[in-house]
Image 1 (tube, helix red, strand yellow):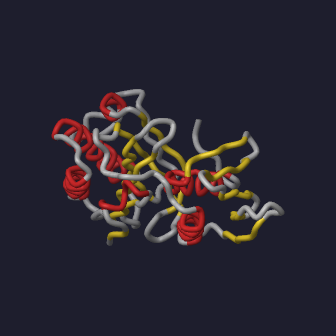
Image 2 (cartoon, helix red, strand yellow; image 1 turned 60 degrees about the vertical axis):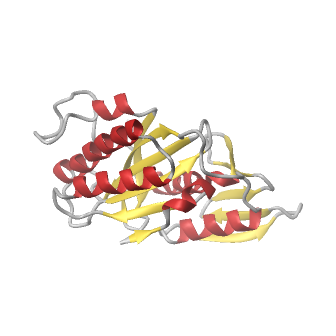
Image 3 (cartoon, one colour; image 1 turned 120 degrees about the vertical axis):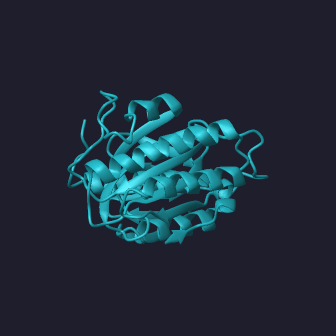
Length: 239
């Protein structure tokens, strides 16, 4: 199963691939990441880094978080805090969280999540929901710097289009979302208790910890953060 097209990633799109539920998943993930990155103009060295990193994450998901639900590979881009390609592996097992404390946490097929941190510019993990089925689970991710030049002529998305994309991304993952306009005519999306303002150039919201403002082009990253907030309202992430 696949959603999205690699060519749409620079314009705020995303790809989500369903991986096999056996150890062949790592090979599939390596192939998919490499093909996507080549289409986006990455050179061989960062592609090889991504292949190794995604292989570790996928193997870890299958070995230490077995589930009847097949893992997923997600790829999108973000511009803040710096331009990055974001690669994520999703699994439905919330009781098994990876750690970078030891290079021996994976089985003989892996070299440890510490190598992922060494290869990537950013890494992380949190509660989320599947992009293909909406089922709850977790996401482990890494990010790599964009190639230069990055294949996009404009980082501008119309507010109406951005609002519709955000609404679709949230509803498809089981986050109830409504729409309205505030007194100033700014479009507002409400995801349960969170209001997200869709301004001419940015999304903005307050999640109880502070005020956040992100460019409309980063709609995939914004959707992921809102889904994570939705999930942590009932079940906290590990510290």
